[in-house]
Length: 265
Image (cartoon, rainbow, N blue to C red; front, side, top):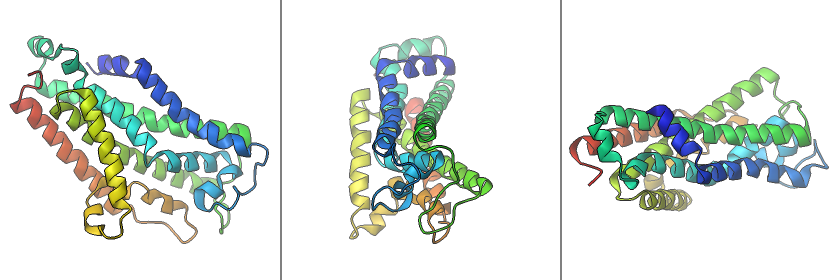
């Protein structure tokens, strides 16, 4: 079932277009600075300012740019489709009659959503590294206002940042997946998932609502940027706990939906 879910969803035209858009962002971002590798990106600071210094710099800047909105939207698209496609196509009742247990169905769909999320994050990183290598070359990781990182230190930080972002996107996938099970149609679930990302981002930007923002997974999505801050390494522990809590709550909710309610109805 896992292979069927992956091949059915990842090879769909809309999925390929969405992944191509993700891959196109790092390439498009590198083109304006292709003629000035190793130079600061205008007056920009942080990862954006250091983007032209090396392939790794550009990859992390691409991840920072896509992670707040574009990447979670693509993840939501994939997860909503995986959760709701069988019901939308009218074949879910036949799966139950196969017989396929609801636990096995949920496990296969959750695994497919997790792997699809991994693919989406990997596309951004791979495109960022490829575009950065072509346009800027492979050089030490540069941090504005600090000395360049060693290869070992840079590797550890890049892997930590990528893994943390993957966990955040898995939380988004779990939310979208649950919406795909609860709501009548996949399109409705996707609209609500995108609306959640946009609304949560707006709330997160409001200084008057810190207590509300603190319980939203979106609030912690960009914490990994502190790994490349000259002032020191940020603490990602709270963000990890919140993302894991969201995943657990959504997974249990999805299991309860499949167990106590017929999603094909």
